[in-house]
Image (cartoon, rainbow, N blue to C red; front, side):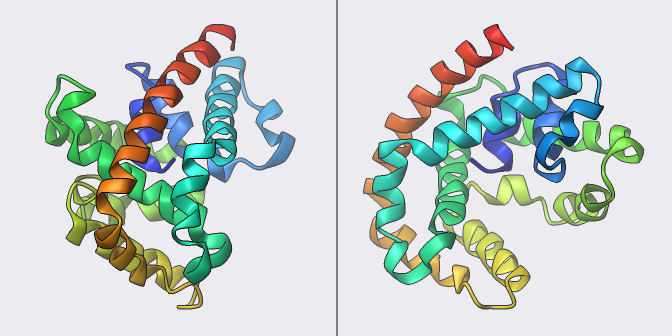
Length: 194
C-alpha cells in the first residue's frame, strides 16, 4: 500500500501514523535501534506490505500491469489502490478527506525535525503539491505516476499506467474493495499482538 493507506491504517495514534509513514526509510534490523513504540510502527508497516505483496487479489491487479511494467507493477498497484481509498474515502472514514489530510500535514510539519533526512526533503513537495488529495482523481494519479517515473529516469514508464487504470477501472476498484476489507481486519489483528 502507498502513503494514504498506511496513514489511515495507523488509526489515531500520532506516533504510529508518523512511523508508519517513514518506515520505508528504516532498513533491515535498524528498527531495533528505536524505542518499542517506534519499533511497533515499523513492524506494522512491514506487516501491511508483506500482507499486500502476497495477497492473491493484489496479484490479480498486478497481472494486468506486468507485461508493460514488470517488477514496477506492485508499486503502481499500491498507488492505484490509494486512489480507490481516496475516491471512496467516505466509506472508510467519517472525517472528510481534505480535513484528514490537512491534519496529517500539520503533524508532519510538527515532527519534521525528527524525521529521516530523505523524508524531510520529500515532505515540502508532498505538502505543496498536495499529493494525498491528488490521489482522489485519475488526473492526480497520472501526476503522481509521472513523478515516480522521473525517479526511475523514465525507465519504468509508470506514467503510462494511467491508461491501464482507465481501461480496467471497474476491475481495479472491485479488487481494491475486496482486498482492503481483508487488510483492515489483518491490520487490527496485527496491532493487537504488536
